[in-house]
Amino acid sequence: MGRKFKTSYQQDSALFQNLWVKSWLAIAIVVLCVLPFVLKPYELSIMNGIGIAVIGALGLNLLTGYTGQISLCHGALVGIGAYSTALLSANLGLHFLVSLPLSGLMAAALGLIVGVPSLRLKGLYLALGTLAFGFIFEYVILHWNLTQGEMGLAVPRIQFASFVVETERHFYFLILITAALATLAAKNIARSKIGRCFVAICDRDIAAEAMGISLTKYKIMAFGISAFYAGLAGCLLAHYQQWIVPGNFDLMLSISYIAMIIMGGLGTVLGSILGAGLITLIPHGIVYLTDAFKDVWPGLSGLIVSFKLGVFGLVIVGTLLFEPRGLFGIYQRIKVYWKTWPFKY
Amino acid sequence: MAIVSREASFQLTVKEVSVSFGGIKAIQDVSLGVRPGQIYSIIGPNGAGKTTLFNCISGIYHADHGSILFDGVELIGMKPHKITQLGIGRAFQNIELFKGMTVLDNLMSARSFHMSYGLLRAAFYLGSCMAQEAQNRDLVEDVIEFLDLQHVRKTPVMSLSYGMQKRVELARALAMEPKILLVDEPVSGMNLEEREDMARYLIDINEEKGVTVVLIEHDMGLVMDLSETVTVLNFGMKIAEGTPGEISENPEVIKAYLGEVHT
Image 1 (cartoon, rainbow over the protein chains, first blue to last red):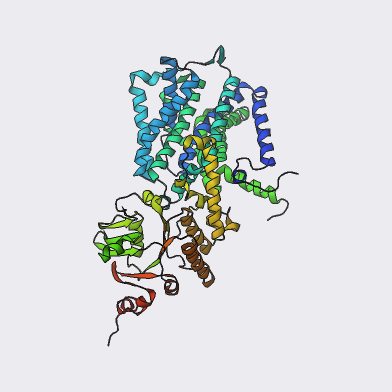
Image 2 (cartoon, chains in turn blue, cyan; image 1 turned 90 degrees about the horizontal axis):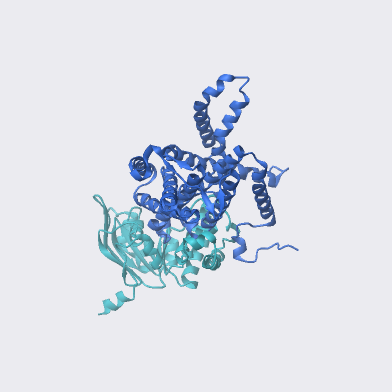
């Protein structure tokens, strides 16, 4: 007989509550492990893009979704991670396993500095403050000798002893493992006292303070954690692309990260993953569609660039209008629907 | 000499505190002392400065001058969260719960400063993190039982009724294990049954848990029944202090509440 009752508090706060959840998780893991052997390299490259975006989105969601602090410099922090690993592994010859956490920490250190204005600024003012940081980053990257400006930097390949990570499939597993660990850590942070403090600050900062929660400590911590995630994403991105230029990390990247967490669902871990998937898929989906209509309407591929931005905007506006809780909201509604099916209530 | 020993026995001492916002003097030279284990009420007409006084004690407002001592520690100039950590709990008048969270998480969030584990432990949910979470959950469950919140434990506070939210507000303050509890209008807008429940809870908190209770309330019945000492504020000034019996006969107080008699 299975256990029908929870007999300890640990069980009640467990991540995977029952057999149902555990079996779905097992299926997901199997599918994710089989995928690289089924998919073509192009499709796998999309998966890799999603994986990296998931890590970045998780970080931003901890900051914006949980703690309620808006940041328009997440892209710049991803860039700091990328440039850190590029410089560390090319100039100092550090191994990937060392440069990965180091680039995370580098971004976190700068993220902490970005966090300081958040103690005084809120909402739009904070958005502008972080935006300024993004521009400063771009300026420095463009004008500093070390980073070679527009030319960009080459990033060495990752090597484990004699094994070189070079194919899409190798990267897939590397990114999958990192993203899985990042997700687990985010989920744990969210259910611990730190996550509760974040949400408390987001919901009512004055009451949070009156509950003995230090705003300074937890706001800064949220910025640090978020930047650490961004740094990890940047590090993986740099090694994956093998060449990074300042244009990779402009305002557009920050905005697409914000789009991810809004469309996925603010303040949820699953939402970050869904949103990262969706936003990464949209451009590929548009390319696919224009390809399919090539014969019927040949002029379409010429419009593709303007099309991309238009659809992007349309999807965001649509989400805000029809499902402000994003994909996570849709997921929850479907779950409730199937729980009670075929009854309405 | 007698006065000194009297002061020493106060748990919370407010001495000549004044606060002004621009030209408006919200509180002027208010002094009071709360002894441990008391139920102490502060009453007064709207805008008398009662909540402002609470905000000064919990550090949300900064007093212009004066001094507030808690167990001999000066509170003025201290950060609000530090003041709370000394053992001053606060239940707000307008419900200030964390709306997105469940009742349980609301109460757990009030215990965060009792937990000492760091970020790394939290990220992997190991060792002291898991142990402390369970241990604090146990204490929170005691509070849930104490205030009969078992059935709404996992309900988001948004979807609770007003009276219930007020009770959660009190529960959250109690979950901090305060030495002294500042309760701001706990029964405003409640029906008779909810009021009686709330009065019972306040008495239980005071007697069973031994928590000093400082109460702001407009419901005179509740104030007179519960409190040992009552202080009356009017236009930011203290006009009377005494036992409920003395206060209800004080001509100054009657004047403040009912206006002057014109003959």
